[in-house]
Image 1 (tube, rainbow, N blue to C red):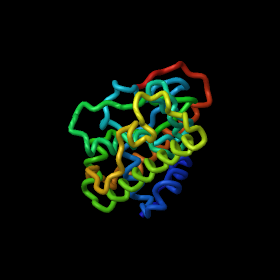
Image 2: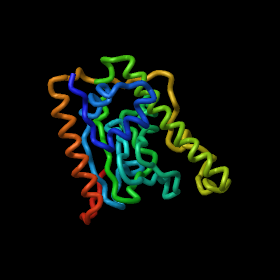
Image 3: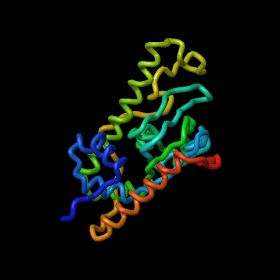
Image 4: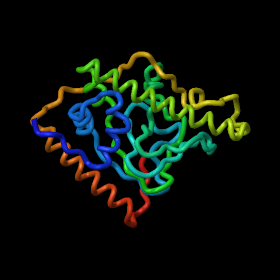
Length: 224
């Protein structure tokens, strides 16, 4: 019965992404406690085109900014409270290639902090609650739609924006091989309520530490 206390950054994320879909704070906290906090120094890589395997992780940017490129062509930025790899996650629904790789490179354009989930673990957890699974799927789908609009706006401003691509790939649907689906295969493991408060407290502490480190000098680090 004790109210769940979230880190300020998680509170903002909940209000912007999850509460509009009527996800409760407790359900959000259950998902958060499955994740971990990582930091990326400016210039560090989150994913490398053609190398980083899809389907192993999914992340939301908590602080900072990421840049998405395709064959060194700038596609769009990823801002705070956006999913980092929602198109790759969605494309796995259709893929028959278990070794599919990222079709883009994702780089930190400034010091950044993310909350990252191991996708198979998240998948197992969501499978136990069809309603929660549906909510999460729609949140991911909405994020993909926002990214598509962002690219289309760039195309309207500059029609030659993607003229250097080898083929006519005028949207992220083609570039990132992503389609918004009507069903979802995402699922999650049973949650232990007795450990939730401690896990959320630990996650909040991780976020505090990560966000503070974004303001101070750090060695350049590459994450793939």
